[in-house]
Amino acid sequence: MATTINEIIKESIEALRRDNLNLTPDNYRSHFCEIAKKKGVIVEDCQKIEKFTKKLDEKIQQDLGKFSVNTIDELLSFLIAKVNRLNESDSSKIINSLIILTKRVLQATTLLHDKEARELANDSLARLDFSQNLKSIDTIKDKWFNFVTSYDDDFLKQLDLYGHINKDDLKKMVKDIIKIIKKEDESSAYKALAPLVIASLAPSIASSMNDDLASISDKLRKDPALLSSVGVQNEIKHFIKKRMDLDNEEVKSKISSLDKLLDEINKRIFALIDSSDISSKQVGVIKKDLQEINFSKDSFELIHTKLVNIATSLEDETKSLSSKMKKNQDTIKTLHTRVKRLERALTIAKKEVKEDFLTHAATKRALEQELKRVEEAYKRYKTDYSLCFLDIDHFKMVNDTYGHEAGDVILASIGKILNKYIRESDFVGRYGGEEFLVILPSIDIKQAFYFSNKIREIIESYKFLYKNERIKITVSCGLSQRSRQKSSKDTVEAADKMLYKAKESGRNKVLPTFS
Image (tube, rainbow, N blue to C red; front, side, top):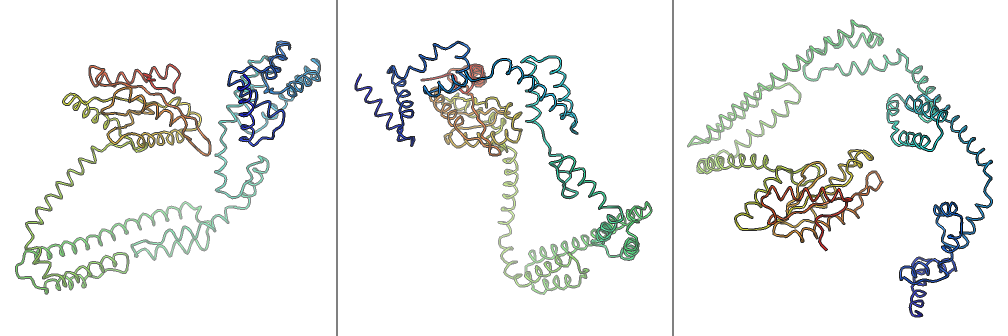
C-alpha cells in the first residue's frame, strides 16, 4: 500500500509539471485524487466532498450537481451563495418583472418591419398571456432560436447596387435611399445614359450604318430626355435590328470568301502531291492568287496574312515535301485509318469511363461492371472477395444544418480518404447519395473488418472544416464475404443488411465485429 501511495505522489507531481501548474495544495490535491481514483485506491481525504454532499438536502444536491465542485472551498462558496440567496417572495417579483420585460421586448419587436419576426412576436405574446408553463416557454424559446439561426439578411445586399446605404439602422437606411432617389433624378439619369447608348449603337462590322447612327446620336446629345420617347425607342430598336442583319450578311460574305480561298489552296496542294514533276511555280500561283484578294481592314485581314504566309512556306518546301509524301502515301493512308480506329476506341472508352465528379470514386455503373469482373474471377479461379458498404451517419442533418455545399465538401473529403487508403487491387465507388461500396479482392471478412474499422476511425478523427467551423462526422459499415453467400447479389444484400444493423444499433460501428 505504501508503495502505491508513493507512486501516486510521484505521478501527481509529474502531472503538475507536465500541465505547467504551480505546486499548490489545491492543484496537488486535484491531481492526487484523480490518479488515486484511476488506480482504485480509496483515500479518505479525497472522499470529503462526497461525504459532505450526501448530508445535504436532496434538492440542494441536485442544484450542486449542475456545477463543477472539486474542492472544499468551492463547496463552501456554493453553500454560502445558497444561504445568501434572495427569499422566495423576491424571486417571484423578479420572475414577474422578467415576464413583463419579455412582453415589452416582444411588443417592440412587433413594431419592426419584418413580417416573420412580427408574427412570431405576436404568437409569443399570446402564449405568455394565456399559458406560462415551462413547456409553453420552451416552445417560444425554440421558435426564437430557429428564427435567429435561420435569419438571412442577404437580400439587403441588393441595395449596394445603388450606392452606400447604412443597413444597420432602418431609419438611417430609409434616409440614405431617399437621398439617392433625390440625387438621381430623371434628367441626370438620361444625361448619364445617353453617351452609353450612343457608344453601344456603334457598328461592330458593317460600316454602312454611319449616317443613321449620326442622326440618332445628334438627337440624343441635344436632348438626352428623348430616351423616354416611344418614337425614339422604336427608332433605336429598328436601328439595332438593321445593324445586326447587316453584320450577319457581312460575316457570311467574308466567311464565304475564306471558304473559297481555303478550298482552292486544298485543291492545289493535292494537285502538287499527286503530280510526279512538281514545280515551285505552281505554289507561286497560289501565293499570287492570295495576294490578289482584297479584304477590308478588319479582323479578317489577319486571316488573309496567315494564308499568304502558308503559301510562302509551301513555295519553299514544295520539292522535298511532295517527294516524301509521294513515297509515303500508303503509310499515311494506313496511319490515317489507325487514327480513325483509335478515335473510335477513345470515344467508346470515354463513354465507358464513369467517375463520380464530386468524390472521384467510381459511379454505380462502374461498380456493377467491377462486381461482374470479380464474380467471374471467383467462379473461374475461386478468387474470394469481400464487400464493405459504408454510409455517412446523420448526413441529412448535416445538409439541413450547414447546407448542401457543406455536404458536398464532406462527400468529396471521404472520397479522398477512401481512395488514399485502399490497396491498388481494391475498388471504391459511390453507390448512391452518401453510400460508398468498397470491393476488397482476395481478403476474408475478418481482414475486411480491420480495413473498414481503420477507415471508420480515420473519418471519426478527421477534421471536416466548412467556413472555419468543424463538423463532426462518423460512418457506419456493413461487411460480407462472397464465399459465405450463394451469389454475388446475396453478397451485396448481406453487406447492406449489416450496414442497416450497424445504423440501427447506434451508428459509428462496423458489423459484423471481430476482436
